[in-house]
Length: 284
Ligand code: SAM
Image 1: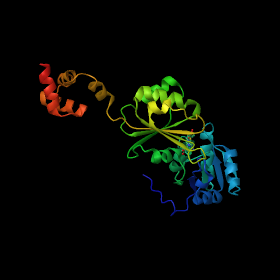
Image 2 (image 1 turned 45 degrees about the vertical axis):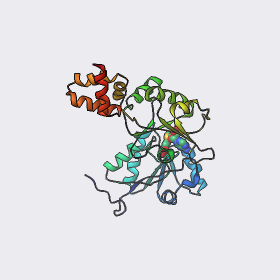
Image 3 (image 1 turned 135 degrees about the vertical axis):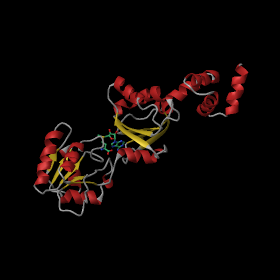
Image 4 (image 1 turned 90 degrees about the vertical axis):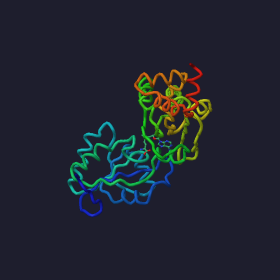
């Protein structure tokens, strides 16, 4: 067990600092202050971060930290913290670690007893979710699906019975293909495409998968896909496609008594028990 009282100790700190996802006004005063105060900034793409900092007149040493050098750099950052210096991590856009590098050093810093402090700020997934019109009550953030079609389909199939709202990131050249596979796997669920959030050409396309696939939107820019969760499980959908008689017999065959089987069929089909009963009597 480790307790971290972030602002009541003298330990060096690793700050996880969010940056805008398109609109520079979303850079928070606190994020700017921390970037001014830390000793070194580690950035996913040093050029992107240099541009951002020069816009805000901040001059600071920036070093590179990305997925391909994550291991080596994580250890380098720990050494800097050991020298009583504070470090910030930023990604090109949004929150570090969210479909971006940073997890490794975060874990390592915690294990070595340093403070790890996260600043709130811009994030594409949550920004899209809250304005989507699809329930945010419970949601599952998936991030990027596998690029390969067959693998993508497999990953989506594993999500087919999830009742929670699903959130994906997708590249513009794969958006239509991904929507088609989603339609094939999920059926015609509610979906919202959030494009170019916070930028001039921000667009929300709200509809069902079929309607959105048939809509001629610009496959350019950055996309978040929000998909409504499963209303019924795929197994119940399969049973509902049978006759009431077959549906009832399925439950008897797996051990339900007659009363419970009737109750379950009524519940699956969202009809009354007397309707189920009437249908079964008619069959006899
Ligand atoms: N760390 C970022 C965050 O907190 O949202 C996500 C980084 S991930 C590498 C980049 C993906 O996020 C893009 O491919 C896109 O799916 C999504 N994204 C980032 N900015 C966006 C924006 N302005 N509008 C829509 N989606 C965006």
